[in-house]
Amino acid sequence: MTRILEKDYDSEKGRKMNPWIGTDESGKGDYFGGLSVAAVYVDDSTLPKLKSLGVKDSKRTSDAVIRELARNIKENCINSIVYIGPEKYNELYAKIRNLNRLLAWGHARAIENILEKVDCKNVKTDQFGDKRFVLNALMKKGKQIILEQRPKAEDDIAVAAASILARDEFLMRIEQLGEKIGIELPKGASSLVEEKAKLIVKEKGKDILTKIAKLHFKTTEIVTRARDSCSSVTITKHREPITDNPRLPENLFGGQGKPNLLWAPWRMEYINISKDPGCIFCKAIKSADDRKSYILKRTEKAFCIMNIFPYNNGHLMVAPKRHIGEIEKLDKTELMEMMQLVQESIQVLKETFNTDGFNIGINLGKVAGAGVEGHIHIHIVPRWTGDTNFMPIIANTKIISQSLDEGYNLLSKSFNHLNH
Ligand SMILES: [Zn+2]
Image 1 (tube, rainbow, N blue to C red):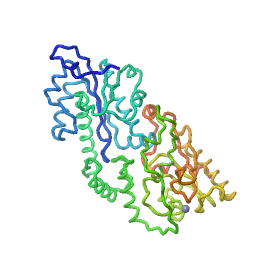
Image 2 (cartoon, helix red, strand yellow):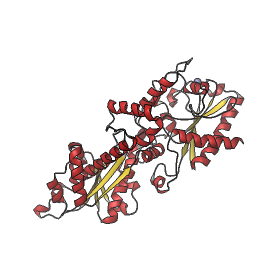
Image 3 (cartoon, protein in one colour):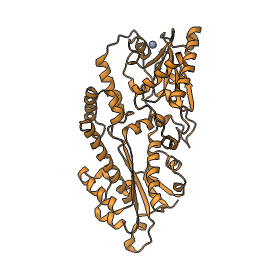
Image 4 (tube, helix red, strand yellow):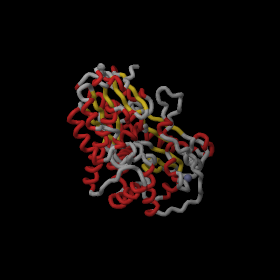
């Protein structure tokens, strides 16, 4: 691999310089707003200009300066900006559940947009996850590049310029988003952001979060739970320890080059509501409003419910109505009805979401990762071709429901069709 050294850049000393592309992203740590990725091409003629502008990493540059710098960089350098708005971001994240792959996709697109305009072999980018994520996401033209991925790449002037463009785009978009809903959206993910989110949910309902925020942040759970506990009081007979490990979704992926990690998305389910005592299944059954508790269908002894934490399109669960933890204690009717519901769920998901495959599983016992240990449940997790390499997800723009409630509407409609 060719490593570009600082001295190679210096055209003033008469050395031949290899042009290169730097990429960086902005918004991944901000609850509100989307994610932007930018790429900037630097060569002999543009390097001195960038130097004279005093381009530094966006983290070391104030927001006010960023706008002006970004304007100058855009004027002087070939560049590309890819912006993924919150709605699209949530849709992708629900399917990919891996921020690094999502980032890789953005970086790959930004790189390719530049390769459309100019030939370039060398690319530098910040370190995130496995380099192969980016390389895999690159199309034919991009496969020729030499990618250098390293921590603190912002020291590189092209990466720094890209970080300025990405931040500028992010700031502009979050401002627009705030104007659209009439509430200024703060940056970052602090307690201030949390308070603002609570206020917004109180005023506009929780569904708006899909359109303005990154739902997989813990903030979503804090904000929506705070609301739920005010609006409904449920008395629970039993308390169960919630035992799932709070792990990052990335760790659950058996990514390329990693030892065989089991991809078990259902392990994720309740880590976000770990402070909630009581059994969520029993709570849901007792609730008078199936829509509110996201129950899609009840049979005599079993029911089917949407998995709402984490937000994840089409993840359904089937459980007996009885609070029972052991599979060997289920009676025949329970077993039969549960399997029938699994069957119907699959039918419905295929119809509604054009699903290509499924992971179906039960976690029994803490050691196996059961989130709600005392109440057995079967997970049905839809999979799409390409959901590990998400090129096709964007390429063929299937419309997947944008919010839980829309998802509920679609699925319950489909369940009703089955019944008649
Ligand atoms: Zn229960």
